[in-house]
Image 1 (cartoon, helix red, strand yellow):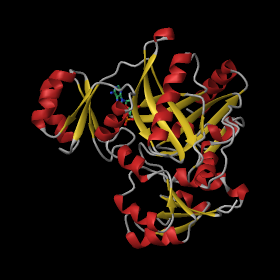
Image 2 (cartoon, rainbow, N blue to C red):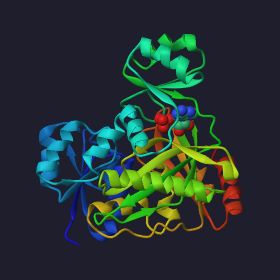
Image 3 (tube, rainbow, N blue to C red):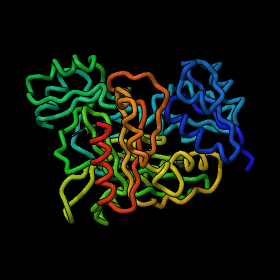
Length: 368
Ligand code: AMP
């Protein structure tokens, strides 16, 4: 293995877990982050600088054999890296994931089913879209939206102007509100030789636009749904000659044999719905991402039993609460508590689905 230095744009919890996943391979990581107290500092060297600062990006590239990133809102300036070091995943995938309209067009071009939606560039187009798409509908800013930010639910077609003002009058899409059965996601990885591996689907529960719980492998997944998810991920990975981990989030409509998926969005990076893989799969999504960008073969994605990942959001659990749950694998990111902020996660692992449900119920009772 010749690659020993990996640069990561962003020093949050994803970078922290990426760097940790390759410590045993002797790989040294450096993150670029403006915050001296960023989470990943415990695992990495750090260049303190803005994500779009050309000199800092060049410095990161010069000190790295390959560069990757931990979030999709990396600025277009990151392209300067390409002249100095390899960057994976492709910045083309990044550009698509940064814009919900372009992302939806990509799904459509690849024949991947999506919710009905319209691009919005002002009140006039919103009012006509509210007629064609119907209500309820969700107005979503095209750029810089995450964890439910930059989104507003519209129940009444008369409320378009208010909704547009809530998201700051920026270009947007209007999404049909999907009465989904459940939310599913797939995490997949592609290596430099083009080999693709898939983790089992995860079933995800969001509240207020923020992921609360992922369970994997998702239960009662029909063969058709499994194939639909894998095909969608494969098409996207191949379109971009992608190297690394990619996540695709879906809504499942209908049940049993009538179940089908519509794609909501992609994340060209390791993903919160894949955190369970640290303890719940033979190789974690973090290690597989790093293996891919380093040009190594991918590790097995086979699950180990049944897992549930619970995000710790806003506040730390009350002191001592987690001590009463020695079965819980606790990951705290070292971030200051703040409303709506993901400050850690816990993974529960069991040998059967029923045992996992019992563990999750006890966790909810003990930790709240
Ligand atoms: P997003 O930022 O698009 O991932 O949305 C965050 C969460 O909001 C999703 O995981 C869903 O729970 C919900 N959501 C987003 N779009 C829709 C939609 N078109 N219909 C119903 N729920 C949605």
